[in-house]
Image 1: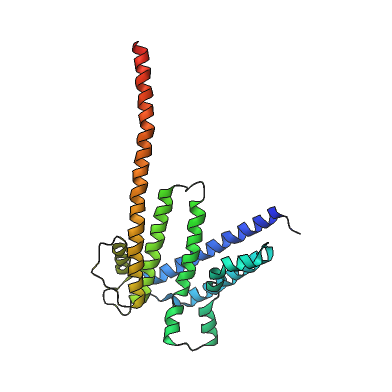
Image 2: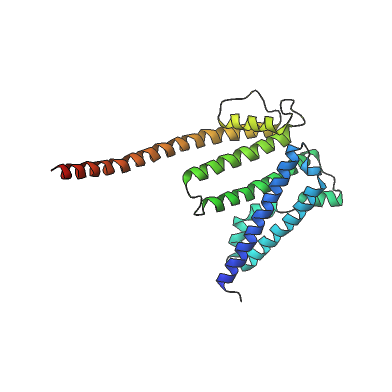
Length: 241
């Protein structure tokens, strides 16, 4: 039997590989998007995705075997299990015909997979001793929301919305929607409308949090500086006496 220390080392290594593979998927999706190429039809992306999904499933299987409570693990990781299935590769290999509605839904699975693991990366990064401030966490959450919403908006609107000729238009729409300032680009698809609501709601929640953070930060610094100033005045008074 493996000791707990050895198990932890094995799982830490595997989790690191999972994160690196997920970053590779995000990079490929981003590269294809910026080149105006559909990553869903990119053979290189499909091959890399298949390898990544197999490793993700291997990670899940190994964690189930090493877990002390297997049913609890299955319940808490059901989303990761579902999105790690390489649906696109299976459909592409077996030439499975799908209804247009299912095709529309499945095209977003790679981005959901990438967003899930990007959230894992954010959690690992913000819990480290290098990035442990609330401001760093806040900025990473903002970047994650804007990036994946803009990418999803581009995929859903690019070929049907004349206002979204490239990814940068989608990125501008996402930023302006998050700030609730409004934008000249209007969503056409149901996905675009949902993303607009999500970004507006996120902006209404996140910006007040940032304001409260800055207010508390300045208040703490002021309270810290006041005792220091008082002690300096008392020292000067004692010297003069």
